[in-house]
Figure 1 (cartoon, rainbow, N blue to C red):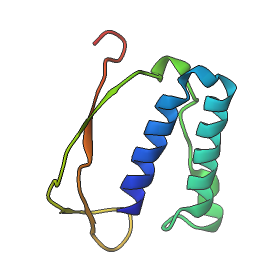
Figure 2: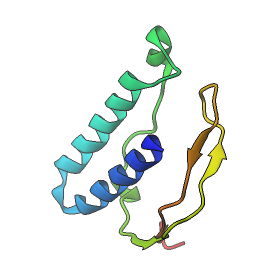
Figure 3: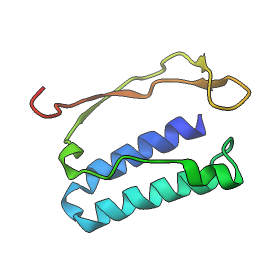
Figure 4: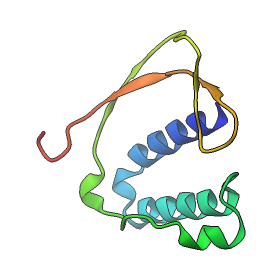
Amino acid sequence: MKQVTSILVFILLSLASLSQGNRYLDSLRSFRDKYVNDHEVIKDKEREQLQFYPIDKRYVVPARLERIDEAPWFPMETSGKLKKLYRAYGILHFTLNNV
């Protein structure tokens, strides 16, 4: 649940910082670095093998958040050994490249 909440918060903060230019890029780089350093499953030298697509500002999109109140919890497999419980908190509505 922490991971889903963290990702949602990251997305919302990223959307709020659209006009911040370099601060936006810095926040993405910081998030990526923290992800690599704190990964629960990938350890030590394996972390050096993680690869990411280059950051591309064309994929910064305005979105509308439709909140979902009291969605049911559901189990989801992760890269770890155990299933974790998650729930949907909202739906993001957006257009990417006019599609």
